[in-house]
Image (tube, rainbow, N blue to C red):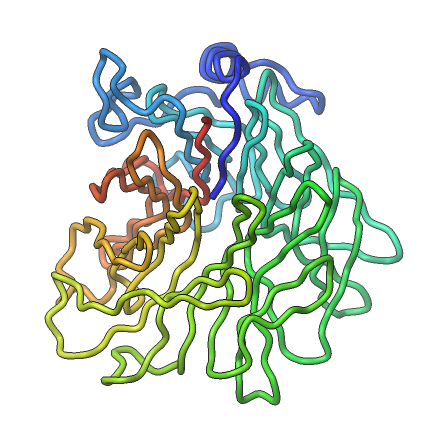
Length: 396
């Protein structure tokens, strides 16, 4: 979903961020340098083997995962020590500093852009924070997504408030462009995309008469319906080859587990056409029900459409051109009803499918950032109090 051009800045980025800890334009340099101490994974090593590579460098050097972590055990849930973090699939991790919670990331021209509370980070030759500005009485933002178009303009999507009402909004290069709302129940999802002409796309859903939820998106603040029948939602957006793709789910909502012929199916939309995924039972889940599925993210390369999501709320999967692939878990799908694995973002690196998200084991009190590379599960920070992964950035 988030692809950018590989350039000489990649070397600068890796050398600077994982070695030097440069200062920033908002005086966060000292905080960054002090938080560069890495938090060990299960093996206690932050090195080239962290992401399944070898010391000879066979790991995926151009893949990055962005997320959050609370380093100290016993801190959760009352302390406020969340750190924004970037994991590199060869170099280990880099703590960026105190954070209210990174929610999305993308890349452009050798730098990583991260949406976080009421500002965004740019991580490249240095680390900088850029505040979001307000006008006309709007305030109290909640950031939900970030995108950089091909000419380098930065778009951030989120929510603002005015007179006790919530509005979906987006910013361009830190300036509030538009705030809008519908005269009905509505919701705009995380994620945003923008094309080279400055058109901004935000996925979501709208409820009609409190009975029908239909998938929708907003183009430059104007509501566009993806469907008019059944229930559903649009969750993510990607632009590839000049075409706009949306991921989500479509179909009647039902309680888990869903009886035969019920339940939503993961789907994607392009050019007004909806494509549903192939419905299959999961290998580790033996109950005789037809699953409901939901795609939470989408990434398009040429004719290949990749989506990550879940089946029945706790079975992590990805789809490639409608075909479902189950991701590895460490719990029994039939017995551990309090265990979940949530795929959040998907991309492709060196021909391998890379999915990032988080892993919950409620009984064990663990919520941790994870990724799957070629369907194999890897934990990012098992010694942290808590952590999650919110985005994948691949440098090409």
